[in-house]
Image 1 (cartoon, rainbow, N blue to C red):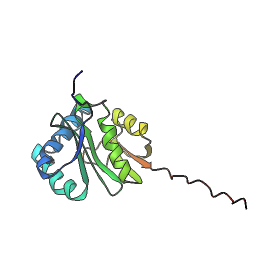
Image 2 (image 1 turned 120 degrees about the vertical axis):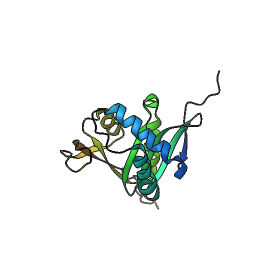
Image 3 (image 1 turned 60 degrees about the vertical axis):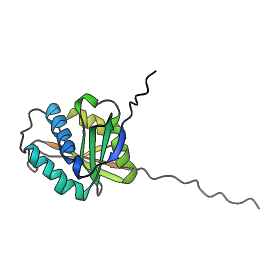
Image 4 (image 1 turned 90 degrees about the vertical axis):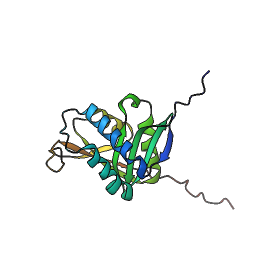
Length: 165
C-alpha cells in the first residue's frame, strides 16, 4: 500500500504565491472556455492578484506533492476566484476550498459565465441558486453571466420544554 495522500494540503497563500495562483486561473479558465478573449497578460493577471485580491481577500491554495493545483479567493460575502487545474478537477479539491469559504461566511455570491456548464453544475450541487442573468455588457469579456447566491441555513435549536413540577 502506498503512503501518498490524495487529499491536498489547504494553505494560506502569500505574495510569493500570486504568480502561481494567477497561472492556475489562466490555464483552467482558458481550457474550459477557449472562446473567451485573452484580455490580460500573465504579468497583468499576477499584478491583479497581488494588488487587488491579496489585500482584500482570504486566498487559499490546494497543494499536492508540493505543487499548487487549486486556488480560492474570497471575502466580504463574495467568492472572487475559484480555479482548479484541469488535471485535478473532479477530485474534490474545489469542494474542499469552497467548504472553507462556506465555514467562514453566512452567505456568498459569485459570478460565473452562463456557458460554463461545469462551474454552474458545481455551484448548484453545493447549494447555490441562480439569482440573476446578464447579457455580459458589464464584464470585460462581454460574455453573458450568472450571479449565484448561497445562504447558510439557520441552525435550529431545540425548543424549551415546560418543567413537570
